[in-house]
Image (tube, rainbow, N blue to C red; front, side, top):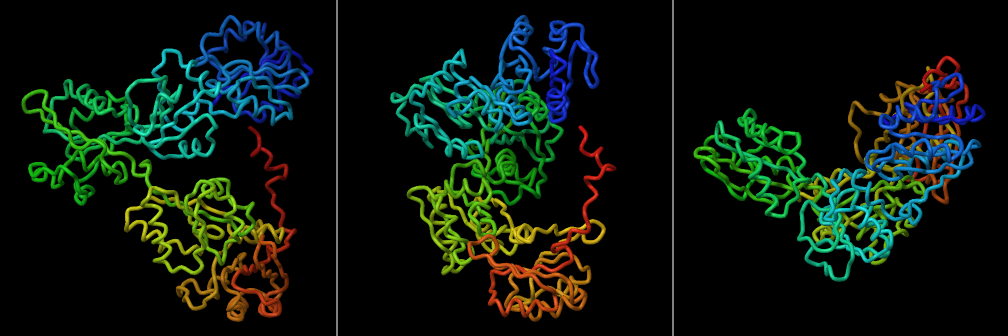
Length: 605
């Protein structure tokens, strides 16, 4: 947690300081005046001398000259100096003074400007030109930053001056996806080092678990995506082994900085070598596996002797593969003996999800309005090589953001095998596939069968959630679906049609709670739905039939439960109808007590 200090030079600016203090956790206000909620100081100079190296950010409110003269004697290095911000006494201008990137002054300047309604003044060139902040982006994504230059400012200057830059991305994670999406014009992206002609560039940037031959000025970002597996003889003498393993790894051009953890089998958990390796490589996490967890893992270099002792085909390879979520070995089993009787092995695997290969993202499209897809979901659609969308349920407008050259197909006429075939075709080429489902794909999204295929073929996939139509219904009805002391449960369910409902989930049983009920996919069986609900809900219970929520032709019909079937039939409502039942519809009586005076303490910082 950041610790912040506000230096107040004028009593008239106290309300401004108090506003900032309320929004920024762990903030103290210092002033020479004796004022409530402040710490009284003898002088600003003495105060700065005491707090400069103990505070993450110092915020001056007053003249810039006072700020500069006060901090000047203590400025040392951008990697250790606190963020310094200056605000004029009226709160009109918020200025990032020192440690803009590394110290976080630029981001804090923007945050404070939003808090007080001021104008953020930032002079850092990369911020003002919307370029990547190369000195801080590694920390943001958990990458270890290195450079082959003595002065890191040299490659930074090359980049902000828009000199030709080659960017190598030979793994995939959230950070590389961001870099691909936000690439400046002077940057060319490569996925293989061998494809780069370095003579064309003045700067080389690489997000990689590897090291490459030194050439032009280079910035490396090493992500933690590698898993070191180890095995050894009983009571192996660890002397010199860690250094040996490090040297061997470096000879293979693998970055030590990318090693995420160390793993072995349970019978080796007390070996001195394991503890020595953990200490040598910076207290990395250790994973211990039982033989049962490793038995079915195929390794390229099995050992009969190891199998006799452990019942697994090989310790170092199998544990590395297991820790990488069944990724691939980038360094197969290496054997070493530094002294007689002290044999050891090690291997390295890369995270399955980090491998630059095909990827399938199951994206929740939201209820229909293209603006209601998540930011992350939109980004996947913009980057996808194939968009396969549920054409009968998802508006085609959602796919209009596809990049040039992308293939956009509706799955409405495809069976499951055809859908899988086209996704696998693109996946096998190393492409990104966006499978677009209506609402939130985990609610009646029919994704279970697709995921079973993906699992069977060991394909990498992920789910981006979406706004469900039941949430859109609450918004359209201007209703809070939970009422204090009356209704605290929302049931998402469906009527029984061609697909039977489990006996314990029959609609008539669920209706006993008289909760707010959102009923999907049930317009065609509305008579049965009404009959089941009337077993426990009063006939006058409010209902709403919501057709194509958030679409251009959205229609909503309100009424009472006794008239539900009539409402649906007379208005020719179809499968894209959400039925909502419960006293929460249009309820304004059961107002929450959360904002009453007795709960104000919940909002104090």
